[in-house]
Image (cartoon, rainbow, N blue to C red; front, side, top):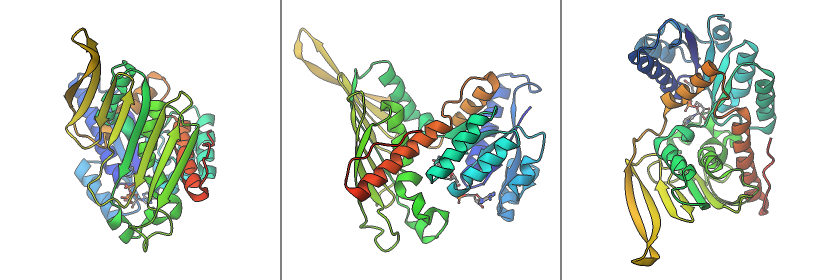
Length: 350
Ligand SMILES: NC(=O)c1ccc[n+]([C@@H]2O[C@H](COP(=O)([O-])OP(=O)(O)OC[C@H]3O[C@@H](n4cnc5c(N)ncnc54)[C@H](O)[C@@H]3O)[C@@H](O)[C@H]2O)c1
């Protein structure tokens, strides 16, 4: 058995259900249960009532209020860290020191110091460490990446993505998310930044602006940023990160290439593919538009866990090692720095 524990039962509940879904799918395929099937084995949350309720709901009896006690169990193989961002470092370090494989929620951490410490701990460990960059498992983005890699839109020229969310209730609740270090670019915008890094590579320069209209009385920092990105391969891009958008949540994204364009997001049932074709009747070319059906699954926790577990099982590298999460936050930090200084900034990659 591969025994998995989950720390933090907000988003962590989706991860816990994701583990159970992967186990159920493997059992259905006839995988030998004594060999390979993962088990949602233990849960941890400082909120006792929530812990008991979710334990009952998911039929998990091993419940902990202290993650240190959970890590002390020698039968536990892996943990999913879904605690507040500020706790990722100590939990990641402790879990690796206890000999557990780790899947850690994004953002990897909020400060450069904490990020560096996690990267070092992950590098020094012989256990798998993966940061959960969920957009790399979101069906519309997975399909877009595959089409781009197959050459469906030719060579990339311009990419854009946005993280538009309304955090009013979150800020009114005054939780850990109100930490100025956990601003909209790092906290949520990291999704859009990571998506563009995955699609187009590492930008070598960013130029950003911020504004502070909607949450003027709520946060001491800008709630909305726009950044222009330059990539070394000649691709240019734009990322919009807002936690005060008066609209339903979206990560609308557009990828332009020399032979076509893809428009997709994380909440629509289809994506649009434009392709440019020439033939003797259309020497100047014509644009063909195709609608491709897409499953809506903006938090594909099962897909993410499946990839993590596959890496552990086969010994292959994880899809997103600590340094990937670290470099995504390096770009986020460059965006903030540029918006504050009014100058272009080169991300300080790890
Ligand atoms: N991938 C995504 O799309 C996505 C979406 C939302 C949140 N997140 C990330 O997931 C993590 C959790 O966010 P959330 O939305 O679930 O937050 P949340 O506040 O809703 O839930 C956090 C949970 O952790 C528990 N907790 C706090 N301190 C703890 C501790 N020391 N030990 C054990 N449990 C503790 C809390 O009681 C709470 O139940 C954050 O890193 C966040 O950035 C990712």
